[in-house]
Length: 303
Image (cartoon, rainbow, N blue to C red; front, side, top):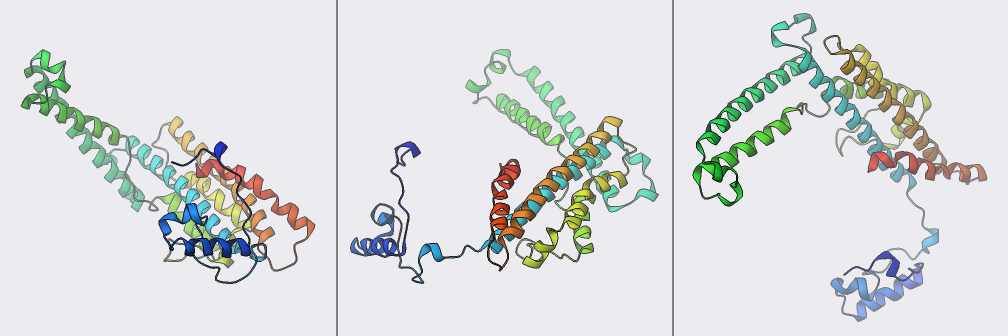
């Protein structure tokens, strides 16, 4: 069993010599990997290059690329959630009978599809509720009050299945269905990137290359990108929504832009401080110190 942190002994600082010595212990024990943790501090091979650990350079650029990709994915996800909310509210506020060809965009078709889906779910729900009500009237009251101990009865089993189906349908009824990245706000982010000559890779999960991350860390790009959620909500047709729903969506768009504007600016500061080929100056070290501030700022997005 793993020991609690308070009961563990202090770990020692590894060195090239200690790694070689621990590997020899691993060899002497018969090279059994399942015992390496206890015998050789998990050292199971010799170093590829005999270079002291304090001389090994951390691949800061690759770390930056991974962190930026993660931050952008989170930004994209927040925009997608906003798209889903717009879709849901548009479906609530619009009827298929009020179809307007002048607004027949792809997103309008998605609104109609969502409205049709919600109507089908509501119709199925009502049918199941009616069936459940009729069935419960036929089941003897003692059995109905003690369903868990009456599972052998066929009618009781049907009641339980209907109740479970209704609960599941009621839970999914309030969730709008929209394929990720197809909403107007999320899909418009790629247009902003392309305007600044940033093209995400078609493979590797649409990752970014180094030059593109450098460009995305420029203030004009950050400001343009994070302003897009609010810019798009202003362009969308929200007239059919209630005033409260419309203001809630616009406020959420502004909050997303503001939060990620701060995150991307802090990341850019750290990125520029650690990714260069020049000797590190005292100012660079102070700038790199903003890593702690950046970590605190982005913590809510990773938890």
